Amino acid sequence: MNKATKGTLAIAAGVVLLFGGGGSLAYWSSQATVTPAQVTTGQLTIGTASSSGWSVEKYLGSSFTSVDTASYLAVPGDTLQYAAIFPVTAVGTNLAVSAALTGGALTSSSSGLQTLLGATPTYTVKDQSGTTITPSAGSYAIPDGTTSLSVTTTISWPFGSTGDQVGVDSTISLSQIGLTLTQVAP
Image (cartoon, rainbow, N blue to C red; front, side):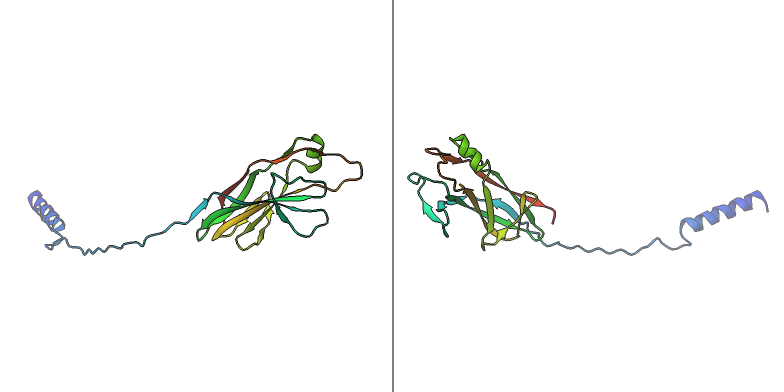
């Protein structure tokens, strides 16, 4: 075969390949869209606390009675309680919440009474149904849907012995109590 024939065949083969054997380039396509649904988020908030004030249970008593701290004079054997209710919104499908208390330190004008009472009172945290929430590692697990938490602070003044004059004509103060809610891994 001569060079001209080979060149002509090469050009013809290239043209056949270029045009796909004489047909056209075609492919199918289609498209569609979807509109996702809206997702609503939950929330975690604490409102302003309210207080039912102070109450006292006398030595060997069986119930607490509300007292006016402006006129009430505590004595050994008294158990004093301060109750506060925090409105809470804790809503979320996979929400797990830990609550921690801050503040609430006891001080007294009498160093002997301060030593006797200790620096920290005891706390009880309950949900809106009155169920006690037990702390774990210093925090409280709050159930989803909780609407309020009550925090009760208890100060127990042990009954002493005859002649024990610790805390006579003294004051007892409880510092501000704070509640912090933090989301934790479920």
